[in-house]
Image (cartoon, rainbow, N blue to C red):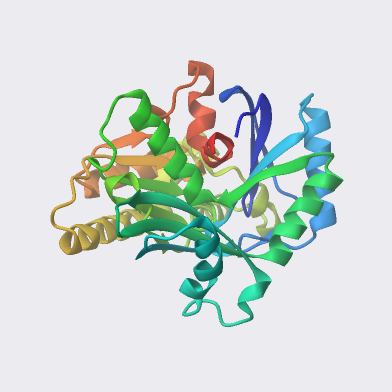
Length: 333
């Protein structure tokens, strides 16, 4: 889809990230705290309030743009890789909903379906297919309209990661299907490992608690009120290294998170012995916590590389891209 200027939006449980892109190049990045109770478990609780909040952010940051792209949390949609007999687009539109009947327990007509072709030959085709509730898409559309935006693109966040990988391979002349990738998203609510064998999304392994558990431990260590925990920026733990290093609870959380990540990676490698994953690409707010990343490095054999290494952008956006790559990747569809 040709586009001049578009605003990518990723709404998390604690932060919203927005990337303004012009001709596929990021020119502005915004990261702000999400108002309390606006998002719960990745789901927006008030669409009107969310629209008003985005409208305020757009105005406050001097963003002049009407087109929007939304990176949805993965749990807002069903995502499947599937192999089907070769068929026309009209045939696929009829058959695709029935490929989700084992996953969707309600009326299949309540969902919108979309797909990307991974590969095809004379007899069959492999797809990456997505199903999302029509009501959900309508709510996102209304939210953008209330914010003064027009929703042009919407897809699960893993599709944003997939787009980043494919853009990277295209720019560097890497043969499609020759490399495997894993992305660590160290988020506030969960820690996710997204696996992309041969550059195509396959599965996500989610681990709880997320990195905001470190904020709770830090608040307890320094005697802060429980009500202030939500407002703690977890990356600020780097500025209080003495308190963090001396607190056994925080160190134990570091260790527990790192071991969980190691076990998931080991389990994946055991079940996929021929994979050629050689790096752990990281992103998310938790990736800015030095103590956590050091603990991961001591437990995981793979070198840890910022997802920014996969993205072509100006140096001043490197840190922003690491914090919220979904809001950029979703604009590249």
